[in-house]
Amino acid sequence: MSRLEIDADVLVLGGGPAGTWAALAAARAGARVVLADKGCCGTSGPTASGGNNLWNVPPGPARERSVQARFEDGGRLSEPAWMYRVLEETHHRVDELAGAGYRFPSGDDGREVRTSLQGPEYMRRMRRRVHRAGVTILDHSPALELLTTGDGIVSGAAGLQRQNGYAPWSVRAGAVVVATGGCAFLSGSFGTNVDTGDGLLMAAEVGASFSGMEFSTAYALAPAWSGHTKGLMMQFATYYDADGRTLGDGGFSARGAAMAHLAAGRPVYARLDRARPDIRAAMRTSQPNYFLPLDKAGIDPFTQKYPVRAVLEGTVRGTGGIRVAGTGCASDVPGLFVAGDAATRELVTGGRSGGRSGGGSHNGAWAISSGTWAGAGAARFARKRPVPDGVRGAGAAGLRGPSARRQASRSIVGLVQEHTLPLRRSYRRSATSLQDSVTALDEAWSGAADLLGGTERELLQARSAAAMLAVARWATHSALARTETQGMHVRTDLPDTDPAQTRRLLSGGLGEVWVRPERGTAEARTVAS
Image (cartoon, rainbow, N blue to C red; front, side, top):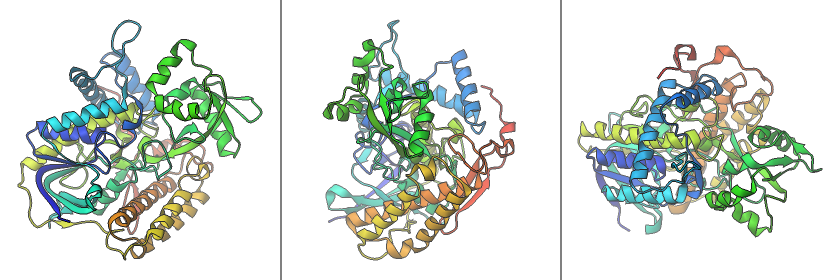
């Protein structure tokens, strides 16, 4: 079993939309690029699993209104300048995608509607574009740790090749883009089993900080026996209680009533009876995966009610992630760039979910734009330095522990899920529940080094368990520090929004988690193009 060793200018970790756009941008800048994916680039992850809504508003008054509305809806925690940048970059790249052969549907006026993407086709094309750009793709090659030089500059990564007998691989590079996605805590949400926060843990180990981790409580509704959380279909739903009474007034506005009912432990049913007969065939075409489990159960969702459940999507549809420290999507750490769900989206979404209107929206636009900027930024950084010698691994938790202890990983994952997945933990919070979680999670971390470890598959499981635990700690500590209700962060003991807390919270640390306000306030930000 030979070790794979490669030198490159830019290493991209992650093969979803952010990672592929980053690899493409770096290659176009003349860099030698390697892309390593935990799954198979182009087929794994939530984007590849279904249709994706997209925040793509052409220049003009509609764009101005969209930015203004999002700025206010997000609690004035976002940056309008970044929102305009994202819209402009996304609009340009979607035009490019269409020019490369992606076929968008046409509206009633005959014009293409470029506000959604079919995930499987989108990612198939992105993989092909990356391959044609000369990027070396390492499929089924999860990264385990970042590599750094003696002066702390990120200079590559190392991992295992799952389909090559777990042979080790390492890539020395001038710069690294972390586009590994967010963390859904293995909730079963469609396409998110690869999203266990690995990139966030690796970034923390080299000193990166995070922003918006308290806004990691995004839930979606799915059929009770399915993990399909693509929410676009639910705009056509009417929700019912167990006695057949309607909850709310239907569509997205009734979602809160349905969630409150579920949080109280009562069953909720949905029926897509708000969909006109003439669009039902188009709905099935746009989201076939949503209807498959319903069809198998013999349910016509347009005429029959079916039970739904709330599924946590964590930082995947939420907001928190690695802090972005510059317009080129650099992190706090030299040589490390971030994109997509691994990065904070607070700059664009504020305290609200990036995909309230479906499985993408602002997060989908952010993946395209941040990936492009991070890839180009990494290429510029790498151009200034040769491929470094004398690199060393920065990883710790789950990597240096004892021999295989699969049960330890399962125990850690179970503990994390107990303090993240239930509605009583994340959908509605209080100082009491948060402090209980902080105590349990911190105690688990203190013993993780002695528990987590192994070889081959067990090593990957140990590392993912450590990452989930780390993400849960940053999220919970941040939630305890934000003593107000804001956006998706709801405190039952503090139900009001506090204008004095209109500032972003940064967090970080491993042995000891820290949380502090970011310098500057929202009052200094204005909605101007």
